[in-house]
Image (tube, rainbow, N blue to C red; front, side):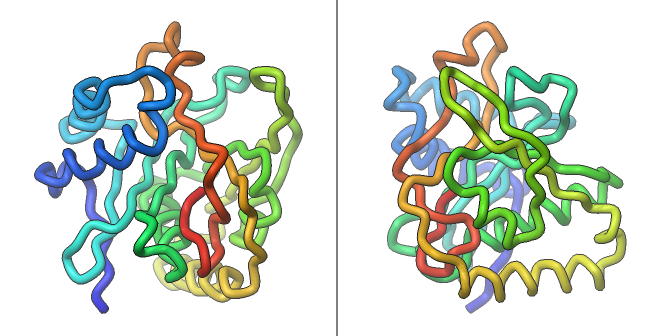
Length: 216
């Protein structure tokens, strides 16, 4: 099977598919229409910087998505960029696709000479740790406690090192236990004043690097 990660800028015709995933999994439960979601995802096609949205293709068919966002956690506005919104369609889970999506975003950061990537999670902390992420503190957000995690990318400055880390994450995926209620971070951003209303989260997502489960 051939796997390829492309951006919405490279494959704008895939925007409706991604918007459908984002709306069905995240935005619909927070009062957004499909049209609003489609507009937000469409904006990533022409965005000069961030957010950027990527799609994993398996033999040319879209099976998952992930985003690289400039901002995500209101309590830490000084931190950037953020890994956001990892999603794999249900019928394609159990194949390690989520780990590939995460590794792809890490690769984008390496090419941009970005030293550190951030995320926050409530229940997938140990899973991310197996993929090389490190918890730096806990953060109170919307009445709940989250682990703030970072991925240091300086050691991945060469393509060889990056492939080595990606392969290790894939190996760790096989060992990772299932986490039934992992929470994702926000893949796309509307104006900050609407952040609370538009938070893209899910309490139904299993583990990040788990070969048997591919949403984070």
